Every structure is written in structure tokens, then in C-alpha cells.
Image (cartoon, rainbow, N blue to C red; front, side):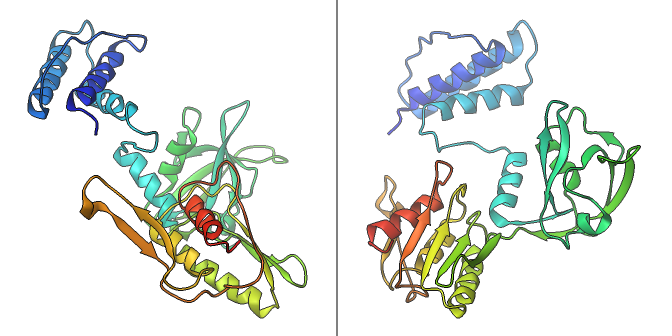
Length: 312
């Protein structure tokens, strides 16, 4: 259990660092319970707001205070603001209103570049956007000072609405405009599945997004129909997603009623155990799971469960 005064002290250090990032103020405060700690926290925040040498917005003070509290907890405990939460939900849901391509910052010019198209029939592809294009402006606003997240936010929106991109392309004399109509985009969780040999199948799962287990199930059935007897299941670079999808994916390889994962909290009612619910679709035959240092969360659960039950 984290003592209330420890959280409060960490939060106050965060507030002081909003004034001076190099600061390391010593706090001489001794208050015994949550209520008094938060009263102290509020009093100091108000004093900083009123008397600091230069003005700091209240929301900045609060954000730094929250960041200070998070800093003394485990590294997987984070606070998400609305913008970050929206992007996180897009990542795990795999659906959004957009144009259908991935972007990256291209150095040394720090330009926003089109990295890849989601699929050949994406609205951007139909409008003529190509991998390697540089995006100079979005609806007339220069991307020069944007990071990839800002640019993505501006291109996403309600399906059926238009966005105009000014593009630069190798081999063309001058920048040109393309207008693209946003559509509902579904990011495939299984970007590739196929046979490596007459008996060996391969499935790559990029994320544990909404309905990813259904995509893996469909890929498995297709490979089994082609005569697959062993499988390479690639989770490299898969940073996770929904817990229930991890259980559903493990369900495809394990017998019914096998424990996949359990969660435990301080209170008894916070403990949850999750089991497979169906007989395995591919319950026999060699199974190899590929992971790397970017395989995390749900990927670790699936790989660990398969290993613990000696399935692969």
C-alpha cells in the first residue's frame, strides 16, 4: 500500500518541477491522513498559482502533480489525458474515421511522410496517395511544426467528410493537392497468414484489437483447410491490447477450462480468473510462438499460457 503522504509528496515535487525542471525541493510536511494531505496539496498549489515568480496555468500544475504521483508507482500505471486516451482507443479498437494510411516523421527534414497504406482499397489509395509521399499541409495548414500525432489527429474525423492534402512526391515538379473523403477504417489485426511449406503455416498478429481472435480463427481455419500440420504464430512487435481477446486467442490452442490468466487486487472481490471456454481449434501439432522485446501485455499472456500448459 502506498502511504497517502508519499503520494502527496510526489505530487508536490511534480508541481515544483513545473516551475523549475531541475528543482529538487525538500518537503517538511507531516500530515497523517488523506483528507489533510489533499488539503495541504491544494493549499500549496494555490500558493504557487498566486505567488510564483511567473504564471503557470492551473492545468499545468495539476498535470505535473499527477505525473509526480505516477512516478512513485509501477511503470505500467499511467494517467492518460483525453487526446492520448482517444489515440489509445483507436489503437486497441482498430477502427476510426480516416484516410487509410500510416505516417511517420521523415528525417532530416522532420517532414510528415506516408509510410504505408492500410490496404489497396483504402480511400487514400483510391484518391492517389502513394507510399513515400510527403504531406506538406493538411486542409491548408502546414505540417512543418506538427508531430506525427498532431497530423494524424487532423486527418481523422467523421466518415463522409473531406480533407485536402498538399503532397510532395519524388519525380514530380511541384507539390499538388489531393482531396480524400474519410471512411470508417478497420485495421486488420492479422496482416499476413499463409503457408511457409506444404505442412507449415504462419500467422502474424500485430495487436490484440477488438475482434482479433475472430481474425486469427478465420486464418487458422483457412490454413487447416490447406493441410497445415504445424504453425508459426508471430507476436513480435505486438504490444498487446484487450485482455478478453488474449483469452480468446489462447482458447484457439488449448483445451476447454484451462486457466489463462488471473488478476488480483488488494480486495478479494478484485480477483478474477479467466479460463478457456471452448475446445481448441488447433489443439495438436507443433506450435511455435515468436516474441521479441516489443511483445508485451496480452502477447506475454498468450505466450506464457502456451508455455505453461506445454502446448508450444
